[in-house]
Image 1 (cartoon, rainbow, N blue to C red):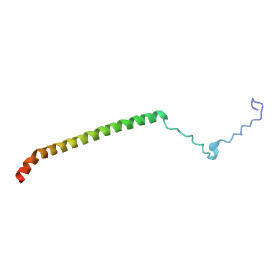
Image 2 (image 1 turned 60 degrees about the vertical axis):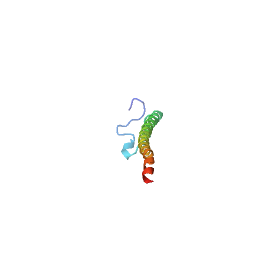
Image 3 (image 1 turned 30 degrees about the vertical axis):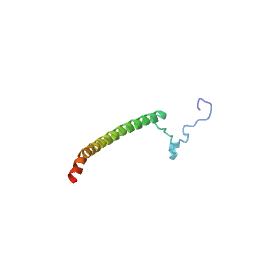
Length: 86
């Protein structure tokens, strides 16, 4: 007899779930960090956007500078071309 006073058999084993291929319910794993990770993602997005905008502005500025140089030459040479053509 067991010390608890109830009947105890050495052959009795409680039914364990793994005896019957019982699948334990999967616990939902939450995304790491919650709100702090979204703040980091936002900061990363803003940083990449600023770098992209700066690069695009520099590229456009360089292209416009080249176009203005070509128009300046054309403007300076246009009276000469008109005189020669006449």
